[in-house]
Image 1 (cartoon, rainbow, N blue to C red):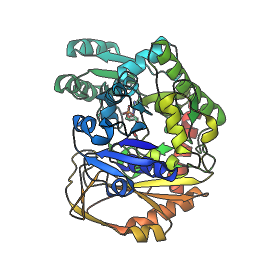
Image 2: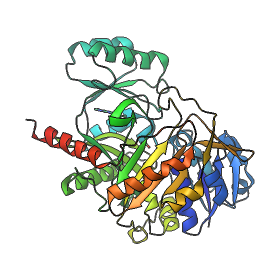
Image 3: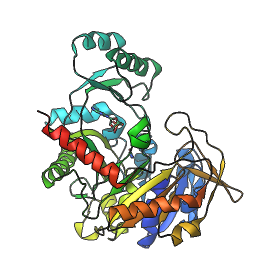
Length: 442
Ligand code: AMP
Ligand code: GLY
């Protein structure tokens, strides 16, 4: 089978590896040359324009059996619709279905209309005066969320990114005025307190196959400080749950994803592809923070590194609407992903610098790696403005997995930093303690 893969980061390197492992031929489209993907592809196209992809010989001559899209931007641009028009099935959602991610307003409106549990109070504004007059009477602590895409970096939360109401309102006005989040307006949301977790699932619009839970670390610096990023690293546990999640929270989270898919179908929108729920466990149970229309990055690397089923059958099932549980299997191992990123990543990154990877060293120390947004030119590796390379430790004991990942960081040399606290015992105990306090707070 010939698979077209769109995207060139760490998540896509993990998808590419899973496709190759299950015996597919790989045709990859990316903006910069990711050496990890390029090496295992049967052919690659490097371009920054989706029209080039539609003109690519493999796409035009009917050589592709189906496609899968990694990042959100091509989903929003409607690449799935364009591919379907020329007869290429996709294991990713159409532009309409991807609105669950590309418009946070669409997501909240859908949850409200269909009474889906996990809804967070949310108010939409596209006019500064409406915002100001509403905020006069709104007394809760809040989060400011641009409605459109911002690469995970546009949300600001009171007490984390701003302290006074005035600062929050000022930022919300900027979002409206400066067009942050594509000028689609702003949401003021009630602030939630709790621990966040990711539940990804495969779906063909009817069947839903959940993947192991993952916890992502979004803040740029140790101890969850600094600006939000796309994710600095993540961990998952051998039992596929997380230390602070019980079976009832897990079941509720699965049910929420299922209800979202069903509600979209009732709206006449079929959702096919990976769906990603960013949840927060609060004292009132799981709440939806955001829904994404794709695998998470880094979360894809946790789950795909331990995937032992037949990945081709899974993505084919999503593309053709006949997804079957029997092809999905994840081994009972814990994983820790640590991203190395350029200085300033999350706010003002300095990319374009050369860096060096001792791949043998990483392999020999028992870790796995995935290249992120890097550029290979004339045999040399350069950073870009996004995440550079992810190291993954895999072991039945989470803390051993963490050590494996941390020990391999030294095999990457360059002007890069990472979060050493991700997956460490102290970090996880701190999260457990925070959760206990939130749950017992009256
Ligand atoms: P998002 O891009 O929607 O995932 O938001 C980025 C981050 O902002 C989330 O991972 C949360 O840490 C935080 N956040 C978003 N919405 C809320 C909320 N309503 N209450 C508290 N924190 C939030
Ligand atoms: N790691 C968060 C995301 O992929 O959106």
